[in-house]
Amino acid sequence: MFSFFWALQIIFTKFGFNAGAEVFPFLIISTTIAFLILLFLIFPKVKSQFIDLYKNQNPQFWKLFVANGIQAGFGTCLALIGIALTDAINAGFLVKLTTVTTILFAWIFLKERMSLIKVAVVIMMLTGAYLLTTQAQVLIPKAGDLFLLGACVCWSLGTVLVRMFLRDHPTEPDVVTMQKPMASLPVILVLVSLFMIVPVSSEDLSQVFNCCLLPSTGMIYSLLNGFCIAMAWIFLYRTLKISTASYLTMMSMITPVIVSVLAVIFLDESLIWIQLIGAALIILSGILVYFSDIAYA
Image (cartoon, rainbow, N blue to C red; front, side, top):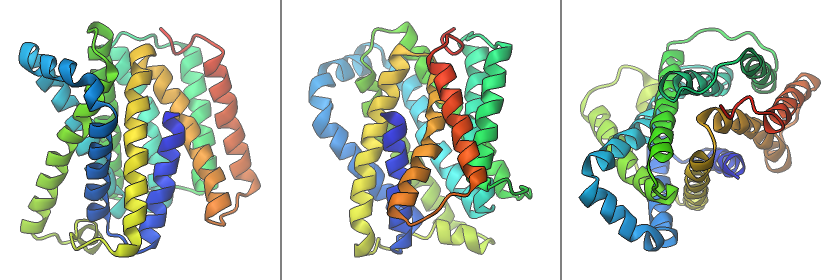
């Protein structure tokens, strides 16, 4: 379900940008909507635990706050900067490297197993993602690629730190989910403010951080995107509570396949044979992960 709502989020974001929405107004409104949805859906059920975590486990509360800020705040902002400063095919593939960084951090911090078969399946998944997202085109390095790699590190580090907490503490995952927009919005707003104050030499980057009003045509997509963000966050941490970080990140690689199917249906895009091979590799890898124990230790 996490992968499904993540895929829908990507599609609604694409619709919003096609309708003329600017990046950060769209992001801020979507995140705010996600917060309001979480406030309505899950906060009444976890209110007492949330308050207890803040009052009686204050150091843990702020550790989680930092982890969520790293993942959803800095990770998202670095990704948007990277996308603005690199080619679309580079961005489409590089964000998939989160699988590698997550497994690496899970091995270091969570002592999850690093086996040869796990490495082989990850290589198989990345090969499929490369074929699906780039159509086997050669990637030409750009300055924005470093920001995208930084985003992968932030996403992975935040995920692993949250998994470490959920593994060692009897806390409902929805308590941590409730923190996510609270931690990410301040980071996003501070970075936007800095870029409004400090001149930016790159025209592409200036357009990303432009904070004019969201056009009315993009509002509906921002609302739908906010709903998908909220659902993705809920299923992300519920999955992390019962699985390893490696399993989560490997199974989430099915997302580009879902995005491609939705793009064919709703955006009139088409897939060539090399992309179909890439999708098949990803699906086969996901089946191997599901029916094996390679990501559970």
